[in-house]
Image 1 (tube, rainbow, N blue to C red):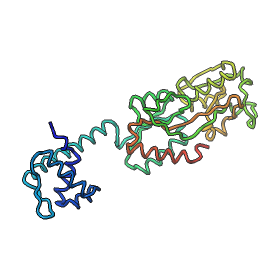
Image 2: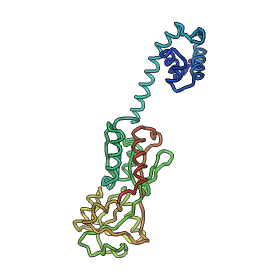
Image 3: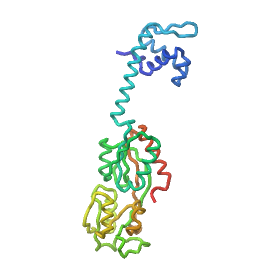
Image 4: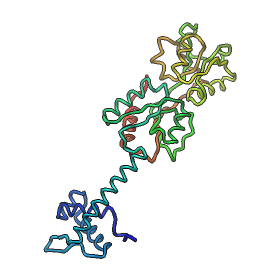
Length: 306
């Protein structure tokens, strides 16, 4: 068995000393003290159970055995570096490509700002963007098909031991009505007044669908849903066309404020989504994720979508 005193770290120190031929210069290169370098060389010699150096005055001179060890140690350390790098790349750590998942509604303002910041921090990084529902994105993250996702954590069961959660902003839910409707845009929406109206909604798994269902449970009736769609933009196009009403998060307000009537819900129906960046804890030191979380924190300190 290999002696416990023979370690990769000591081989690194040994190679630095062989290159610099001086304990002080090797220590400076490695960011260690001269005492630490001397101790590493001495214990490495003990591990090999043969002399590697000879003292000549204050200098430590390598013996032929040390020259032989240096040849093999370079291969060992280089191969270890390669193995570490390949392993990290296989795990998706430190690649020049990042896979981000997002809700459709976050592509209006949040995602563009984060991506612009990422490209400043890591210009060579290629970003792959996947859009989907809360449920679908979380499943892809769990299966390591995505590196990070932006979802509503208010409506999701997320394991805090496995995933890191960085809240970005909170968002209120609004009633969206066709522009031609007789609603007073300055008021609030009482869902009891819409029992006879038709609605469009997202399919199950979307964060906004969860809020939609919860609001009508509080109102005490089942809305008449004429169609369900798989993205929020299609849903709001149907509302614009007069197909029905719906509930949407406030982040859509800026884009649709001139083509739809968007009313805040009455107090008893009010609810909030917490939008957050979610990623695996065991990858939080990945350079790409460090850049993304730095941008996320900057975003969270701002005002968020308006």
